[in-house]
Amino acid sequence: MGDDKAQPTDSDPRATHFQTEKGLESGRPPSPTPETTGLEGGGGNSSDGTTELTPPPADSIPDGGLQAWIQVLGSWVTLIATWGLVNSFGVFQTYYETQLLPTTSSSDISWIGSLQASLLFLVGVISGPLYDAGYSRELIALGLFLIVLGMFMTSLCHAYWQLLLAQGLCIGLGMGFTFLPGTAILSQYFHRRRALAIGISSSGSPLAGIVFPIIFNSLEPRIGFGWTTRVLAFITMAFSIIPVVFMRPRVPRSATTGPRPRRALIDKTALRDGAFMTFCVGSFFGFLVLYVPFFYVPLFAERHDLADRHWAPYLVTLLNAGSVVGRLLPNALADRAGSLNVLLACTTVSAVLAFGWLGIHDLAGLDVFAILYGGFSGGLVSLAPSVIVSLSPHLGLVGVRMGMTFLLAGVSVLVGTPIAGAILGGFSEKEWQGTIGYCAAGLTLGTLLNAIARFVVYRRKGGLKA
Image (cartoon, rainbow, N blue to C red; front, side, top):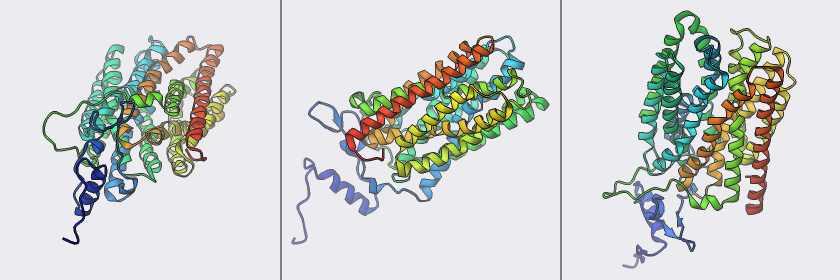
């Protein structure tokens, strides 16, 4: 026929593109191929023996629409159930030190919150490859179940080891299974406005960090610790219905039969990526000290007679109130100025504010510090996923690279606040200065490493946006 054109064969490099176009025209998703599935051993091999994966074209990502914004809503809820609880731990830290566990040291108690936050990152080594394999819905459902279960178990705890298992281990594991897929899935629906979408979803965590401490401080004197914690668990369970029902990957998992190819836990090409690895190490030092103010500002206010035990926990609310703006504004700017550029600015200002904490001697100054630090430190958390996406060669490696980054960040979060508690010791003024200086030094080192990563990207790509 005169209208017929030679079709590319399976061995022709044009075949994948042809199949994709044909599938899009017919309204069906393209057939999965080794190049598009991103499975280890399925892609073409480069000269150095590594697997090369072909990303989906950016213009095929919807960048909006009802389904895309429903994913943002679902991701917003997952951030409530993960970082929202981490951001609220300061009220639990203060309550445990002053009421439930008065004979337990600050360092020991902080292990509960740091274990919870570190598992949020560390489990990403497992959930990242599983997300890349298409198991995002299963991960989110399992994670939210463990979070709610752990909260109900926490309400029954009376001993330190019980809290470590329920609030630290069980909730932490649930956070680890939930956070990465709940955030990474947005990269399938947004390209040009990816950072803004992640920023909107990230606002769920500081909003929870505002509301949960207020609920805790209002209800605990009236109905006790157990039922107050159960109220928070019921709220989390009700919100969890949204992501469990509505969140789903845009490209469904392959329906092919037979054994599924093995996924790698580590992207070996990332180990030779100078910008990515420098960013990972910078994240390690940043997250090492990021939550020191969230854990210890209320205690600082009480020990320095700046606020009583009823007002001091509200400083966590102020930290999270500032963080709401810190999740939205930096991410909105990142789509124009570049995620790594804005992240570098946020870490710089956070380090400066941490040094400023050394000179605070009244409640008004501490309130201002809490709002400003919450705002700029919020950018570190909300921008990290979009920076990882921008430093990844394509979307097929986003999950595993997030897992690698979260592995380092998880180790740092695990030991960071207990180190601060050990430095704090007997709460002398010199020990407080050492704790605050430790926070400021970690943020400064993270800033320098992020600046080096930005320089490497400039040498590689040129241009101001990164």
